[in-house]
Length: 448
Ligand SMILES: NC(=O)c1ccc[n+]([C@@H]2O[C@H](COP(=O)([O-])OP(=O)(O)OC[C@H]3O[C@@H](n4cnc5c(N)ncnc54)[C@H](O)[C@@H]3O)[C@@H](O)[C@H]2O)c1
Image (tube, rainbow, N blue to C red):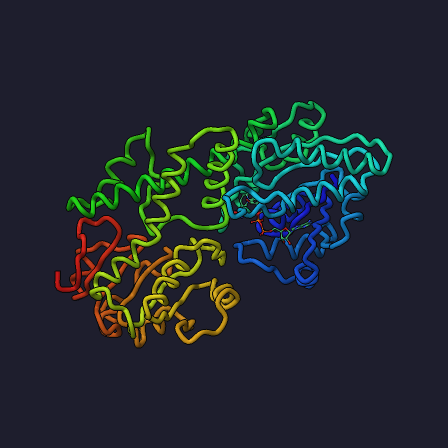
């Protein structure tokens, strides 16, 4: 089948590469000429395991093309996927300007039936706006062309995006049109063979389903962080509590890990956008507001622990920081807790020696050269000359470190672990002080 994907970011590139891998002919359109040029040279602008192989193979076979030419893309694809960014506006609402710009260009160049598929995460009612914009532009041209607008939200996780796309838990399709539903069913069939995983519903429900999924996951995280803060004060260990509740099949183990707060390009913006949408319907989304507020507070927890440990004076201190990406297996630092921590440390007069297995280039792009940030070549060298160690991302390579070496290298033998990677009692046998999240050891200061 012929597919065009607008936007070659995390979602667009994975979508395009996976559809091409199934034998479809895919054209990826992006307005970023530099990105398109890099992709044509086989350079993948993001870190996503397995994506480079998929892109290279399908590009070489001629099934995957990259272009800035929207008109050619619209001519090519029966399916026109919209996978452009929907970043948050100042007020938390989703910025739809990129989505509507694509709708406009589709209206300008469409000459025969097309299925326009909203894959970007967009507020309820956006498919209607996309339809209106296309109709308006067609009207300006004085032509009538048939088309459908379908909602097909994406649920992939960065870091496991290929597997998620190739073997999705479900494919949600929002449409009232049986023809569009049939076409999408045919397109997704290779990915849903073991059982029918396509859930067809009305457009507005499909749009809300995406927000509901992310809001639910964010809620689980904030709930556990709230409980972790309580456990810390009550002398309980949240890790024991986690196992105690996760074993209840009604609760389950996924997404109940306490930590340094959720980040990334999706949860923070989607929770904010849903709160904002609720307001437009004159509904006060109290739970969602709290999810957001708890997360905001949680992103300060590591800094507060570090600050308390050093009696509120971090001037001249150097912190080794392990992990910059918002989660493992990605170089994405959008809204990453590490950024919040670093920026708070800098504000307090401390320096940072940071290491991340893949996000160093991204950190350099965001912060550039500055005297209070040093990007270390590996985890061990980040420790050199540092007063203490803070862990913000749960990369596999941080899970079994040489604790004796950490103790001997740091000026103060102390670890602040924002991801609860270790067993406190074990770490302490090395003569290290260890502060996790919610482990029943509320810290007042180094002396306290
Ligand atoms: N990243 C994720 O894990 C994830 C998961 C599910 C859903 N989503 C949603 O998918 C959408 C895309 O997210 P992303 O992370 O891939 O974004 P991204 O920022 O990585 O990529 C967006 C791309 O769209 C391009 N673009 C902007 N305007 C364009 C236009 N008019 N025509 C063609 N290209 C254009 C940009 O240049 C950029 O390359 C968002 O709505 C996001 O919420 C993201």
